[in-house]
Amino acid sequence: MARKSRFYRPCVFFLSGLWPRRRCILPKRTLTAALVCALYVFFTQVDLSLRSPTWTTTGRNQVTARGALDLGLSNEDLAVPSRSNVVYITLRSKRLKPANIRGTVRPKLRRKVRRTALPHSNSQTGSETDPPMSSIRIYSRTPPPWLSAHDVGTMRALAGAKVLRVEQPQETSWPLLVFERTRLEEPNAVCGLALGPMDSVEVFAFHLDRVLGLNRTLTAVSRKLAFLHDGQPSPVVAWEASLDPADVSLTWAEYQRSLKQRCWVHNVAPKPESGCSVVHHYEWSKLALFDFLLQIHKRLDPSCCGFKSRQQDGCHEPGRHFKCMQREGIRLANIVRRHHDPRHLVLAVNKGYFDRNEDNLDFRLLEGIKELPVSAVSVLMSGRLREKLLQSLFLDQTYWESQGGRFGVDKLIDVIERRAQVLLTYANAHGVHAVDMSE
Image 1 (tube, rainbow, N blue to C red):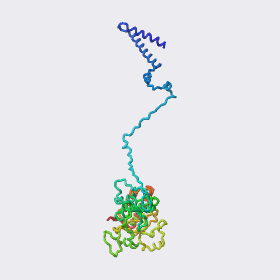
Image 2 (cartoon, rainbow, N blue to C red):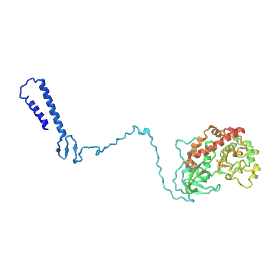
Image 3 (cartoon, one colour):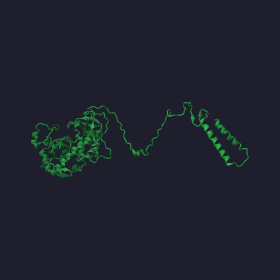
Image 4 (spheres, rainbow, N blue to C red):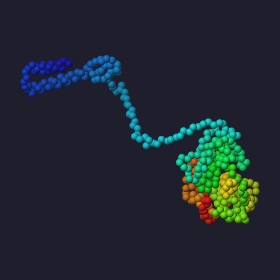
């Protein structure tokens, strides 16, 4: 500090001695010396201020020579930072959102379904503990073209209508479900026969019938009932009071003669001695095609004479082999029609079998058949049978899930497709023609 003052004083004395003099032209050497002294004084003051800062108190807060705000920290807190006591704080930057969220991800719309508790169920009244929710799922504006509006309405009623009571009709051994707001005496009353869990083929038969354009089966859905079969998925088939299962009685010989007569074709009344029944000729062709695809033998071959029967086929009745030797006298069974529509058959009690091999099919069902409906043959030959069956069976959610979803349903359709190829091969070999059977 003393050394710096020795150079400081001559500069001040030299500069102060210049002012009393009169105005004159200074030489360049004097101006250079004055400029050097001025710069020296300036940098000396700056260096001293940095080395020995002075603190000034302004009210409650203290401001340092560098302009930093002191909030009452101690000297230890104001220590010079080093690597050991420095804490680095990283601020998380705000994530930018995409410009158009709705355009990138479309939110899934879910409807909230309000569930209401129902009274306890019992076998007498048939009241359900489950809410009356239909398992029929139709996501498009219109159902598939092979299902009519009446089919869809009946499916929704069978799958979701509340069961009011359970009755036991005389015509069948299955319990009859009477739904709420339904009267049996009404012509369009919707009731349902509750079949067993092993009869799920009834649901598949209904959709196969509609896809092929036959329209001869009763509407069937799969449903879980808490008071029947321990809540397992079981088929519920629409029941009509106008059905008459015992009106048509034909032997095998009479049936074959009626096929040759082509009864009621073009609405021509047959002769009395022809032996024709009241059933239209085309109905037998539809029945034979449908029963062959599902291998239903209870109608045209009740004694199981056309294939090697197994224990699960239900053909082990006494005297069966003797009946097959005298098959001309075997009577057809389960030939059902409506009282107000005697010309057309109703394909009821469709006990089919998917586990029967192609080398053990019942070709007796096709004997005497020379014509097949062109609507069904076109579907079998178009290659779209699987697509249509999947689309139709998917509507019944309970049945779809009970069969194991897409994987299980595909196995059932595989069987039908193989039998369809066998049927078409048989038709070509035996001269069976496809005929338009629409009326």
